[in-house]
Length: 223
Image 1 (spheres, rainbow, N blue to C red):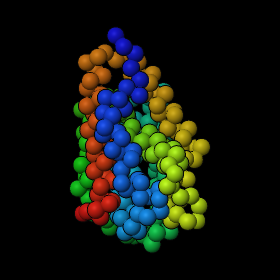
Image 2 (cartoon, helix red, strand yellow; image 1 turned 180 degrees about the vertical axis):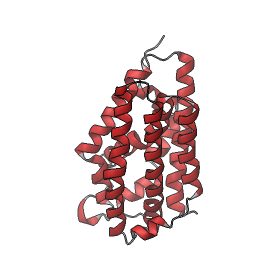
Image 3 (cartoon, one colour; image 1 turned 90 degrees about the horizontal axis):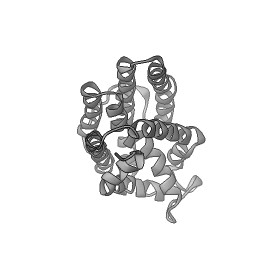
């Protein structure tokens, strides 16, 4: 039996992963040419996504089988509610989006599809299922920041209105969180059977495809 790891999940859906990491939304953001309305729409929906991300960690607390898992889920929930949502509100304000605006937002179809998929996966499965469904977001954003920094047409600094977004996900804190999540996944993937890995690869592929739709929603400014 093979000892699987996170890279094996990426290999299992190589084309979808590339389409996600290198999406036109990402490329335009890195080059500083993404339309402002597209970015604002994405920011607003990402706020709603974070709320459901917090719900997923609350579900992880419920699904915990020992104190280590319980603390892991609780710390994730606390970080999102006490830190990340506040930072996101502040960042939205810089883009002319008030907290009242965020409170009145309807969920776009892509937001509904992705967040409910994650929560449904967590409800039906175990902690590993849910973490694999969340991995395209947590791990993917860190990889996107790193990929952008490798591209010749990525603009950094004041010449790019989206520079702060890249800086957020290339930061030491986020990169450390990304590596910790990959380590968590690797430790558990190493023990799964071939059949179980195939199930997890399907979850990862579906979640990655939903992330692609999330980018496209921003690019299209879709409802």
